[in-house]
Image (cartoon, rainbow, N blue to C red; front, top):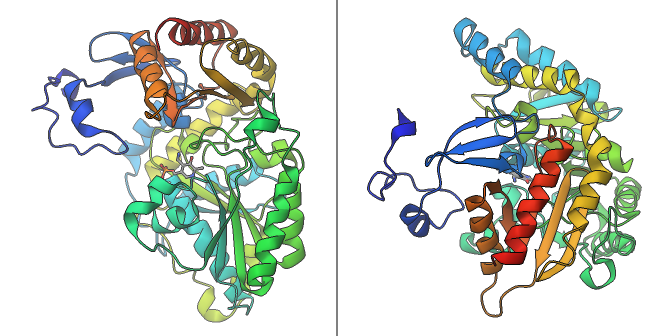
Length: 442
Ligand code: PMP
C-alpha cells in the first residue's frame, strides 16, 4: 500500500525526517520501495546499487531469506515476552552465539534497541562497575573529538561533533575529549592504518594527569570513526590507549556499531587491530539492519563484579521493554546463520585489497584531496567549495543517486561501506559510477 504513496509534499508532510533537510527533501523526494541483495528499487522504478549497506548495517545484503523467514516464523510463534524477571529461549541462545564470535574474555551480553542505546548502556555499566567494586569516585567519561556515539544524552556528551552538541546546552558534566587522530598533511592517501599519529594516544595521559585517574571511569572511542568521515586509527594508537587505561584502572569501550559484524574482515574491529577493550557496543549488523537491536559485550570481570558485589547491585537497574525481543532475537539468529553459511564475517578480508585498489584508482579525479580505507570501508575527501562546505559532496550524492549508486556523505567526505556480499564486478561498477560522478558531474 505505502509503496503506492504519491510523492507530493502534501503526502509527505507529517513525517519529520531525521538528519534531513525536510523542506528540500519534500520537494524532491527519494523513496525506496524495494530491495534485494545489493540493490534498492526507487519509487520511480529505478535500481540503485547499495554502496553503503543502508546505513552501515545491511552487511548480508537485502531481503535475505534466512532472516526474513526467521522473523516470519517467530512473529507467528511468540511475538513478545516481558524482558524483566522473565525471558524466552532465543535471547539466551543468541547471547551464547554472540560471545562465541566476540574477542576472548567478552563473555556476557546486554541487549538494547539501537547503537545510541548501546552507548548509553555501556557508559552506565562502566559507572556502575566502579561502584560495584566500591570505587564511587570514578565518574568522568572521556570521549574524542570527531567521535560519533549516537544521539542519546550520554552519546552526544562523549561524542565530539559540534553540530550534534551545540543545540542542546550543557549535556553531561564530567566529560572530557581527546583530540582526533586525523592528520591530513602527514597521512593523505594512506592505504590502511596511517603511519603518523599513534602517539596522539598519550593525550590520554595528559587528561589523566589533569583530572587524576581516580576520577575517570571510562574512555570511549570508535576503533574506526565512521560517521565523521572514516578516520582509521594510526599504527599503535589503540594499543597505547589500551595500555594507558589498564595502567590507571580505566575501562576502555570500543564503539563497534559500524565495525562490528565483519566490516573489517574479522567479527569485530578489536580482533582486526589485536586490541581487546573491556566493553564493546554494537547494533546495525547484529540483525542486518532489519529489526532494531543492539548488544553490549562486557568482560567476565565486569559481569562478575555485579554478580559478586553488594546485594543491591545483583540486579543491574537498567534495561528496555524490548531488551532481547523475541522477533529481534530471531532476526539476529537468522543473520548470524547467514553470516556463517556465507563466510561473511571474514569476506571483507578477502576483498580488501581489490576494494583498496579500486578506491585509490579515483585519486586523480577532480577535487579529490584524500582517500582512505580499511576492510570494506572507504572514504573520498573532496575539496570543499569556498564558502559552501558540504555542497560538493552532497551534489555528488545526488548525482550518484541519479546514476543508480547509493553513497553516503558527511561534510565533504564520501563514505562507502557496501554489503559484504558485494562481488568484484559490483566493486568495479561502484567505482566506475563514482568516477563518472566525480569527473563529469560535480
Ligand atoms: N555509534 C556509532 C559508532 C555509530 O556509527 C552510530 C550510528 N551511525 C551510533 C553509535 C548510533 O546508532 P543508532 O543510530 O542505531 O542509534
